[in-house]
Image (cartoon, rainbow, N blue to C red; front, side):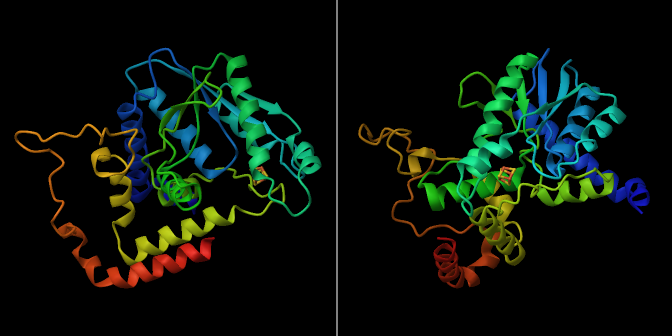
Length: 306
Ligand code: SF4
């Protein structure tokens, strides 16, 4: 069945869209430069397979030359199918490395039963991957986060961290020695899901460690999916908003010098709408009816998430 879908025009459109969006993100953020050696982090999940597949395509068509090395960290979780990724990568004929580090035992030793293990586990994983990137002489580390991860992180940080902050498509790692890129930053999770299904990637389940899914992230995902269902276009609008930030119309004194604000001949480009009602763009007029309703539901959702 997957073969038929693969050959269908809808699959071609889907593949083109993912490749186009990834190519655009790569260009917009200057993610890949001539001579880069990119370490592609492959967890065995749908996102990382789609990222590797897309980067291999971009490598073929890009006007610049760069190399890729796929890296998987085998954290020694019980039941991890060790042969799956080497078989897949050998089939592709690409350069790869499987790193074996038993972080599973460390996490089990350090974290009391019943407590969430993800934060220590991912901190250990991050440190190992940064080290491996140095050992491999990688100039960039590619991660498979997509548009929906970026929006979920934005809300997580707002709801629980008191910060307007998300996951940038390109950043310097927290140890200062690596550049991290997210080539799928513009891609929808639903597209990646379909693509992974059609490509029949050999997915490795992510719950082998037995840890609970991050409940807060799961709830935010449900909240966003619910919004999108009831108000189509809202996700796109929020994602566009992340690329259109007006520091002069927020409250961060470190981003905008409010203390030295002076009158300006010709006015201000962001507009003086201090006494106007808040504009609702025409394209969202169909939301007006639901706004009051949403406000009460959103406060309920936030309380539920706490
Ligand atoms: S789900 Fe398991 S493997 Fe994944 S970060 Fe959490 S503890 Fe680690």
